[in-house]
Image 1 (cartoon, rainbow, N blue to C red):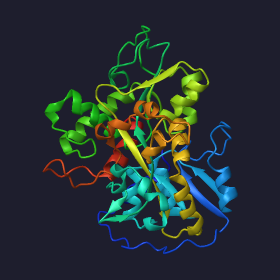
Image 2: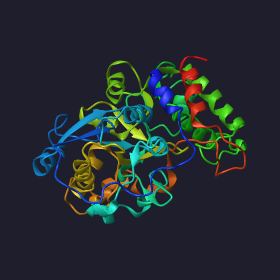
Image 3: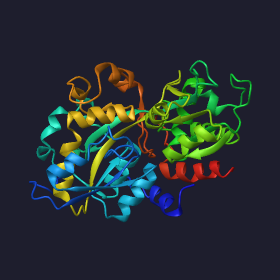
Image 4: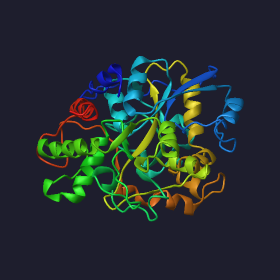
Length: 385
């Protein structure tokens, strides 16, 4: 369960954006010697997990900026760390990025200083999770879906529905799913329940899994409370989830392609799919702390992060999609056009990307349930209330 600090941080979402309209940095100066980054697991590799994947070492040699990484397992943890300070950059998902802007924890980015900005996918350049009133608060990094990971010894064919983790049933091996499935340890998982209901209970009228009126939200919580009886563990640490699949009898869970790829590389019996209900997903942005101590190295890293060879290799490593489309085809890295297609490059419009719920609804006339309620109620769900 989240610590008290993370929970309180998550509940302090401001509703008005009053951040400065202009970037603080007008030109890039001399390297300060280091850059401190909060990142998702697997996002910044220096060859320690697999020597083939290293996009840090050469950057450090060329720039003179040592890369220090603090791994965060949830968006709430990222927001908490950025509120504490001491970091220059964060690879924030959409359910954290606007909270960071509203809380004045990140500064506008001068995209004129990011030479490779023109290579960014046009679908991402002005994305609402990092662009406010026409001002950019970050550089797109990577995007992809939340997948259903499953044990191929249990499921000889890919599950066609998320019901294997939401509803009690016997699985194809004749055993119950109770205690053998997992769910994500984060309030944003409410959206996964809402998306499931969009498909199976259209009479609820849900248009967006992040915009729920009271009745829709109540239905999502009821589904999550039923799921609580099935879940063996709520996961937030990618490596613990992988261990659970290997050693603790877990056979199905929402996951990231990162875990799937590593387990496959270890010849574990796992695969992944996007079931008929579709998927939520994440589009992550490298954002700069408002009080970054190493802004020059931070800008150097943001430019480096858009190099097509880095984007290509990261796409292969994480099983996600590059923010630079050329990374799929220019041959500078390991990725191919076929690989990007398999990762869902053409499914952008089908993914409901993580975003922070507010009381304002664009998809319906009702007031919607804001994020602070998601936080407190989901803690209750996990606690069996």
